Image (cartoon, rainbow, N blue to C red):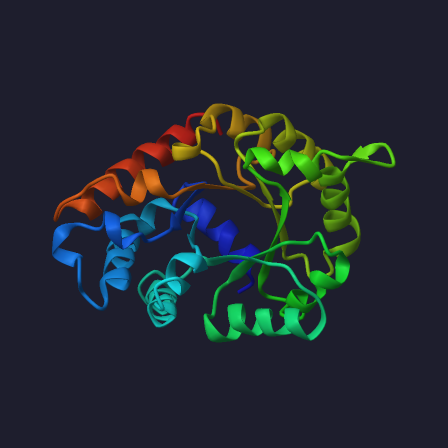
Length: 270
């Protein structure tokens, strides 16, 4: 099953547009996990198991694992998701951006080593920074388009032949690059007008939308700007607000409560 097929099935099965970001920070873990060699895996796996029926995807951020030499725990976590919660796609958030044989190796890393279902990619080196990932036709390739950080406007809002640079990326992704039909785009919840603009350019292409929760993006504005005609098309990411909802032995139950509240809040506007 392709990434797009998995995503469509998860949207329907779990009645959810929520993506839970897995950004493990051991300094914020409950006391009983601190100091354990497998703490990152155990924390993330508990979050996953508590929320899997409420989400359309999970998104582990590779830097949080690599910085602590926990890549083996990332591999184990993705394997755990695939085994225990089959059908929920895993997006490896690595934002790779390179060309040629280097990009090919990043694709191997994402899809063969970690066995992710999709990966985030920085396309601002052009088409040949995207193509190596499309060699895996069943895998998702989610391109940075209009990012949620304030500094994104420094470049992404520049005029290029009468259109904004992020609009140019969206058009290229939808029209010229999407040879496998597996491309999606990252568009931040902090810019709902740009979400609507990207949706108008790309049709039903899935959008990964960070920026709700801790970053302050508005759920109602995000959903109304980005949903497709059938009320899907979005992976609305929340990380810290869900991961660190609780601080004691009940952290996973607290995460589930906030995840359910977030999913239901999203569904109000679909």
